[in-house]
Structure formats: C-alpha cells, structure tokens
Image 1 (cartoon, rainbow, N blue to C red):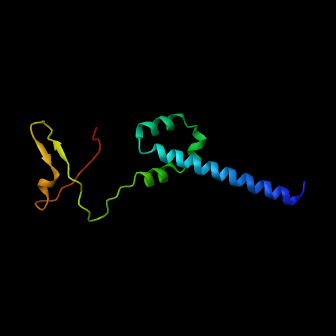
Image 2 (cartoon, rainbow, N blue to C red):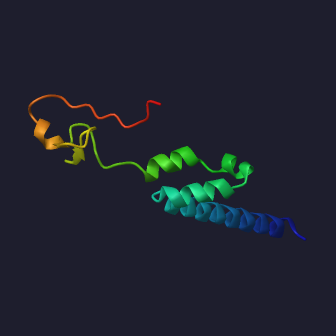
Image 3 (cartoon, rainbow, N blue to C red):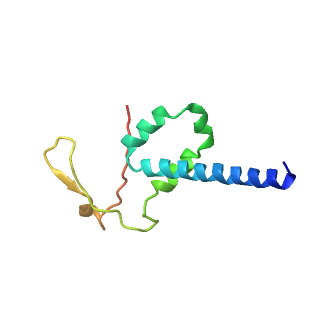
Length: 106
C-alpha cells in the first residue's frame, strides 16, 4: 500500500469520525430543551463519553435565553405563599426594584 493511499484513507477516517462527533453533539443538543429526555440520555451515557462531549458548553449554548441587560423581564402571575392572592410582576414596574430568586433553600 502506497503512502499516498494511507494518507488518503487516514483523512477519510478523520472526516468520518469528525462527522459522527458532530452528529453526536447535534443529538445531545436536540435533547437538551426537554430536560426529562436529556436526563434519561445522560443516565445511560457511558462515563468515558462524558469526557469527550463538552456538556456544560453545549448546555449553555442551547439553553441561552434571549434576554440581555436592560431588557424588561417577561410578565408573569404567581400565587402568594398562602395561596390567597396572586402577584403580577408588572405591578411592581416603576415602583421598586424586584429580585427574583429561583432555587432551593433546604
């Protein structure tokens, strides 16, 4: 086998592997918006593949919002803790600053 043929076959192999890697990243990107499906995929993903896929970067790219600094927050309506009333975000607009905290304190 000539050197030129080996290089050509190696080039094809690299292109095939790169193509499969891009398809794999695309498949992960497609599952990220549905976190339930994404979690099922991740549970079954062999641990060595976790090192090959830039999951944090991919997750941040796919889940990035459209809001920028200075953009008004979308309005929403939520019940109070005692469920007696509802609070609308827009009712605070122009009156006082609002801090939204999403998380668990347990």
